[in-house]
Amino acid sequence: MLVAAAGGVGCVGLIVPHAVRFVTGVSHRRVVPIAFLVGGPFLVLADLAARTVLPYQELPVGVLTALCGVPFFLWLLRRAGPSASSA
Image (tube, rainbow, N blue to C red; front, side, top):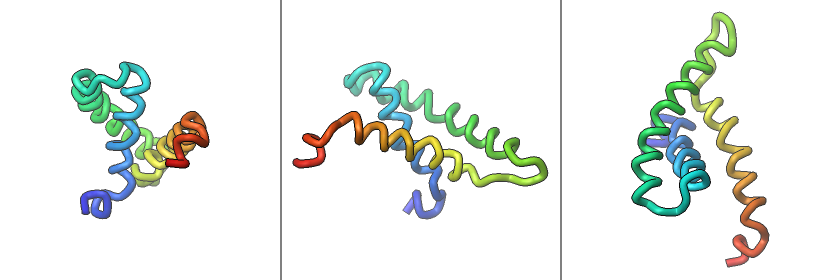
């Protein structure tokens, strides 16, 4: 329900933990607090970019998070290879 209300901003909850896991490893003891600390600034930067990209207009922040999220998840799927999808 939250994603339906907030739109594409919920995509941040999917992008950031995967990106942090790629950098720090798979230990949840490191991933969870670092994802918590990285998610907020990521969303602030996305909001700042959404407000400044188009002069005199405001782009929805969900558009920018989607522009980050879609290529990231396509890269994750290609990196996983065909064996991961044939479960």
